[in-house]
Each structure stands twice: as structure tokens, then as C-alpha cells.
Length: 460
Image (cartoon, rainbow, N blue to C red; front, side):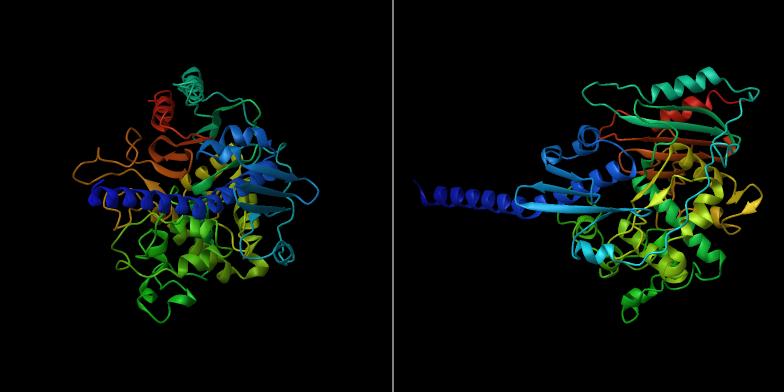
């Protein structure tokens, strides 16, 4: 055999061995962490079964559903094992689930956290704050067409690629005009919001701005940045996903910043804040869960720990009837403001309704005046006008309004958008809020079809 052929063969074998080594060293940690955290939250926060989670959530990546899973109902923990790696997540009442990475379980459980008191039962309170829904018929609304649009959101185009829609709620002119749930779910079911949580973090920052504890245009109060170019990053830059920090949001590369933060770090904000500056602040748009978790830590510092853990509940959720909502903290005690929140479909609709109504609820101003307008104003760095301040937009290229982030949705739409196609879509001129929650890992679901089907049924 010729020497050059031997060298090529050896090179290929070496590359294959290196690739195998990379997989063995990196994938099990990430996969075990994903499984333990996901199963913990779905079982202890939402009350679902492990089998249901395996069937739906764990299909996102090959091999996840075959992980060894141990649910301990005595100490409320979930341990997942994949190859040589095990990972553990713990449940705490009032806090949800937390993935353990660097600290021990005892250290995390011993944290002193003052949680909010239990909310009142809203089943006897009128919508929208409560769950008593009026049977008043709104003139001009084609309720049969609304029902059909919602029904279509549960239909699998390809049975081999199910959409797994869990719940849909439609609110028009403040009234709930349609809703549907898949088998096993109902109006009281907590459902994962994933990155819709970013829009909740927007609201928490807004509360601190209202209190005069934060200023949007001021430099972000991050201790790690005070002696280098990162001190130029403003709170506004973080909110508009244009901080300029190095960041990789890749979900399928196990060594990305996303997984280094979510799986390998107890203090997610500290990890994100440690990254170097790559672009001039305000000039480069980069969707970043890291930036949102920095914002969450900034809110914590501004509010103080005595108030921080009660803040989202007493100042936001309970005010607007989101009594099933919960945000989970990381092991450092900071809410994972980018991703880890749960609420019912009606709760998510209430949150959308708050923004549709300019941050006012039943005559009480919850968010500061002008906050919703600020949040839905395109970030200068988002050249396609697709992002405001932790809310997605659909305005498109000024020279070509059809070139949009969400084809088919109205250009004026304001969206909270989460992994696996969780959506709150607000269409201001139609006085419309549409919520869809589920676990979709394919392209067989169209939010545009749902929203446009509802719009066609509204008064002209």
C-alpha cells in the first residue's frame, strides 16, 4: 500500500477517534443534565408522568428518552444517567426544580429564601383576573370559526411527526372567546414557557425602573465589567440583545455557551457576565439567553434578596391573576429569567393582555408608563426589526415588510416565543391575544394559521 494512502487512512481513523472522544466527553453531561432538569420540572411542577415526558420532551434529541431515570418522591429529586455521567435536579416548594452542577444538594437546600405566600383561589373570581368566564356573546365574532381555528392547532399533518399541542387560549377585546386542551391537560395545568420567560424578565426590569432602582440608558450595574470595555454596556443593550458580548446560543453543540451556562454552571448570570466583548455595544444583534440571565441577576441586586423572590409573584403574577405561575432559580438563587417558568395557558394569556393594555390591569398601572411602547420598539441593531426589549417583533425590513421573522403573522404582532413553539401573540389593532403551548420538534405547526384563522372570525 502506498505511503500516502496509509497516511490518509490513519488521518481518517484519528479524526473518527477524536470525534468519538469528543462525543463521549461532552454529550453525556449535557444530555443527563437536560433529562434530570426536564423530568424534575415536568413531574414535580406540572404533575406529569415520566412516560409522558419521554414521549414528548425527550424526543428533542436522539438518546434522551433512553436515559436511566430515577424519580425519588421522598426527597423530590430526579437523577438521570447516560453512559458514564449522572445528573441530579431537586425540587423545592415554591421554587420549582434546580439542576445541581457545582454545589452540593445540601448547600442548595440550605439557602434561606423568603418565598411569596400562597395566592387566593381565583376560580370564583371573574375573568380576566379569575377563572369565571362570562358566556356573553360578542356581536360579530364567528365562534364556530374560532373553534375550528383552535381545533386545527391540535391536528397532526403527519402522524409520524406529532405537534403535541397541549393548550390554546384566545382572548379578544378582553374576553376569552375560545380555548382547548389536549387529553391530560386543562385550564389549571402548568405548562412550560421556555424563552417566553424572557418577556417576564422584561416585566421585572420594568418594575425596578418604575421604582427608580434601575435606569434603562445607564451602564448595566455588573461588577465584573467595571475595569474594561464592557463597562459601556447599558441595561438597554442587554434588554435589546445587543450587548456585544461573545455568545453562542446553539442548543445542539454540547460545548456552546448555552450549555456551559445551563448545564455546567450553578450561577448562570456569572457565567454569562464572564464572557468577553466581541462587538461594540448596541451595534450587533445576538439573541442571548445569557444576557437575560444577567438581567435577572441585576433585578435581584436592585430588589434585594428580601424582596426578590416575592417580586414576580406579589408585584406581577398575583396582581393579574397568574396564580399558577412559577419561575425557577438556579443553584446560586437567581431566577433563570431566560427560560425556566411555568404557567397555565390562561395565565400566559393574562400576561399578554397586560401588555396589550399598556401595562395596566383593572385600572392599576403595573408596568411604568411607556414601558410597553419601549419594549415593542425595534432594537437598532435588529436590522430586520424583529426584536424589541425581550419581546419578538414582526415589522420586517423597512424596504421589504414581507421579509419578516414570522412569515404569515401580521406585521404589527408582538410575540413571546419559547422553544418547542410556545407562543403569546399580541395583535394590537385586533385587540387580540393568542396563546399556544405544546411540545413541537418539527415544522408541522403553524402559529400563523392559528392566528389568521382567529382574525378571520373577528368583527370586520
